[in-house]
Image 1 (cartoon, helix red, strand yellow):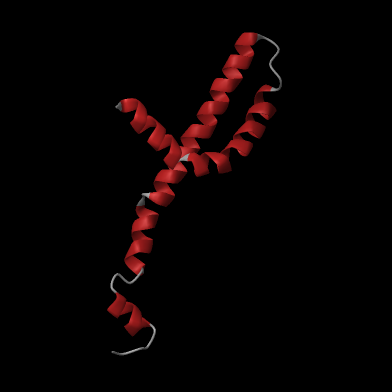
Image 2 (cartoon, helix red, strand yellow):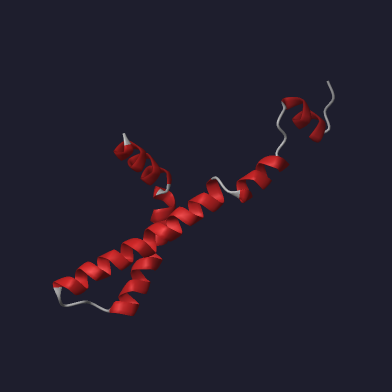
Length: 91
C-alpha cells in the first residue's frame, strides 16, 4: 500500500511542515507577488509546495532520524545502572 506509506511519511514530517510553511509563504509572496492569471496562481502554489515540503523533509531527516539524533542518543545513558552511577548513587 504505497498510499498509506505516503500518508505515514507526511504525518512524520507534519510538525516540520507546520514550522516551515509561514516562511515559505512569505518568500513566495515576496518573490512572485499576487499572480493574476490562473497559470501564475498554479505556479505559485507549486513553488510554495516545493518550498515547504523540501525543507520540511530535510529538517525532519536531520533532526529526527539523522546524525544529530545519533549524537544525542550516544550521550544519553542506556541502562538504569548507568543513570544511578551518573547521579552519584550506588546500589
